[in-house]
Image 1 (tube, rainbow, N blue to C red):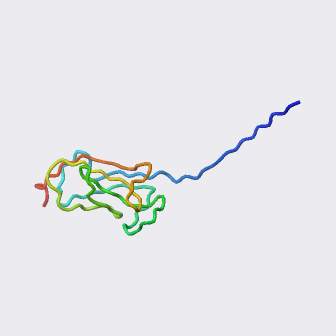
Image 2 (cartoon, one colour):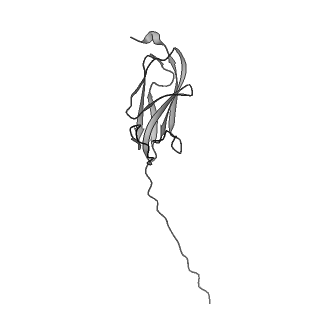
Image 3 (cartoon, rainbow, N blue to C red):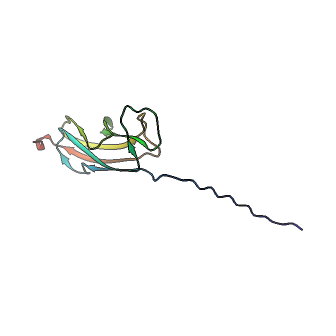
Length: 122
């Protein structure tokens, strides 16, 4: 006589909630002053650290900002203020990076297309 024995193994993995990053200013389609250009975000589940830190720790880093695909600024204390931007249409991209400036995986990013009109600046 044979017996069938069922063995089951369950692994529970504690996971932190995934970080989120939302570009809140400027909003997509906005026409804004570009001297300076103010960038603001809503961020959850990610600790912003100063740039001097070089040890990579999961869940810690800063925000890099690109204008038309070019790195322009980084911040660990939003909002960011990017000085002297010419008139024109720009793709603003914000993304989370680790302490060594590498994008975190999976990528956490947001973007907006804006128009800079320095005639609006006071």
